[in-house]
Length: 396
Picture 1 (cartoon, rainbow, N blue to C red):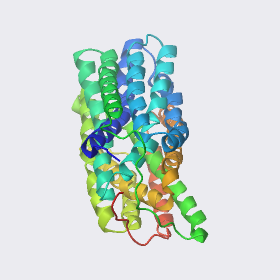
Picture 2 (picture 1 turned 180 degrees about the vertical axis):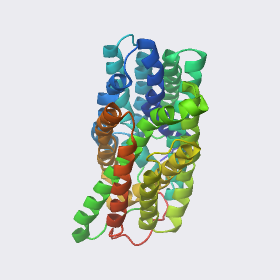
Picture 3 (picture 1 turned 60 degrees about the vertical axis):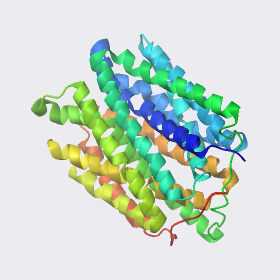
């Protein structure tokens, strides 16, 4: 089966970058809309509620279609859909139109993880390293989303912060469509011969429960920090450091770009050591550091936030390899879809928690404290996971 591996890697990386850019840049853009429309932060933040819900719920049908039709074809649809949705966001003139456009954006964001991760898993040799490399672009996407949102808002307006990335995604989608039609990238799914051995059936329920709990807890930490960090920096550091909206965007960009590189390191380590070891260290690291940022209001807030995001990012290859190990190949996208339903469905719940916390206390310290303890408990549970060694192998 012919397939240009370099083009596949390129489009998979671009897809991960753009998906996370579109899922994250609203948290910076909302600060400018807040000033422009004279509406409250929590009111505007809630416009992303359905979109964030669809990022999770849309993963299951996206995974099902990807397994039965084409993972690469679904990624092309994602690029085009994200581009059109983001352009509509930039053209929005009121809350209703922005709400609808953001909801469409969330729906198309749902495609990447179930389709894209299976695409990478089945076209790679050193799978941990390949996943780590691909995952770098997720963190970079979050960072670039914040960076370009800050730049475009400063140089033009918040509408431009939606529309320029939208045009870029549309062009990439049309380019991938061309390469699919020309045959340079296979429209048909490629299957790997690795991940043939499944764990014993009497262990499956225990593994499923542990993985479900850990994915849920990690997702809460990811969503809470990604959503609240721009505002937390605004609250805690703006007065002392005289920060503008673009400055906050640059800081968040730096945090996610630098920490995103840890995905690659985590992938390399996962190819060499036990997934369970890498996974558990990352979980307890996040828990301990969350306890430290509860009330920080200096440069340490930025440094420790970066470390938390780095831990969160670095264990993703281990998590995805564990899921691949436990899943039949023909259902891999569906299993990843279930994972990301869990991962992103917690987004709206996290959004409510953040909005409520801000409304009641004007801060997010209580949330950081609570999830610090939750992650430490989760670490103790993951230690019982019946996994002994990492996965290595070659793709077919």
